[in-house]
Length: 125
Image 1 (tube, helix red, strand yellow):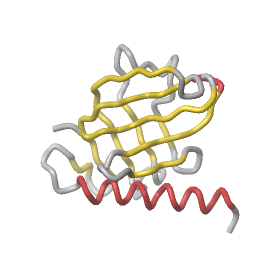
Image 2 (cartoon, rainbow, N blue to C red):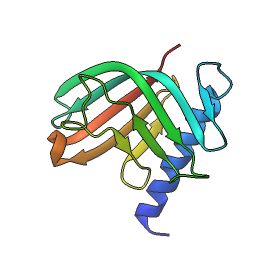
Image 3 (cartoon, rainbow, N blue to C red):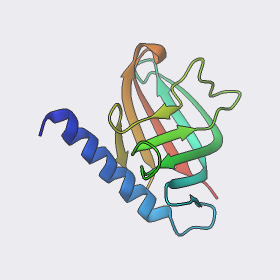
Image 4 (cartoon, one colour):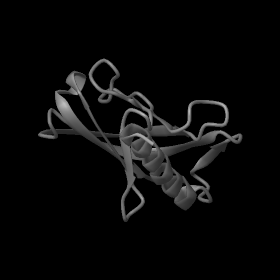
């Protein structure tokens, strides 16, 4: 198995850990068998993680039965616009990590946001 495949599998496992923890909370809404929608605080570090922006919005996670596995989509807000920020993520392009407080951390690299970036998805009630 190549390194990219291992990274994707690890990201999917981390996403599974995140959804398993939150799935029984009422505000973590199930979408048929395919995923979840929930409110979240987003903290976006960009420009090689030197700048920060944050906002409250909804997030959708697709586990892959009907859509691509491991898709995370942050709903657009006035501050978080797809014109300036990546709002859709895939386990085969980004790295996912579920931290000790069950926040989802998404990391990647893109010239659109000035290099390395990190997105913290913190579930809110």
